[in-house]
Length: 148
Image (cartoon, rainbow, N blue to C red; front, side, top):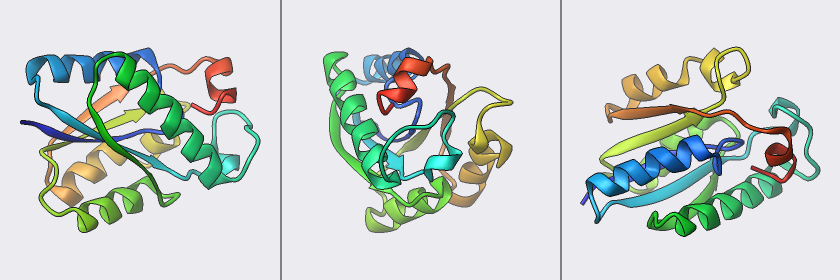
């Protein structure tokens, strides 16, 4: 059984991420997923959304988990983490040592993604030593406004 920590915010319910998770689940029918949504500060989001950072992240997590379940992806739980994705991942791994086989990191495309500007995929791999599956997803304006 493969265990994945899925880290996403604005791309959490996008077709690109859902497709990749379905592929991973297809490779291992017993795969389990935990969705971690960092509480990204509102000014850092691609477009403005109403609410506080934690509430926006919670809504994104709920919407994404519903979409994942519709696609047959076994979501064990969702978490809202620190506003810094690196700190959010570190907190999750510290609270659940040895719980994951890999990290799925979903970002916006280069040029738009703050996470890619921070070189997050490489930082995560270096810092935590787990395989990183990087998914780049496009986000439509309507999806962002709905909290994804």
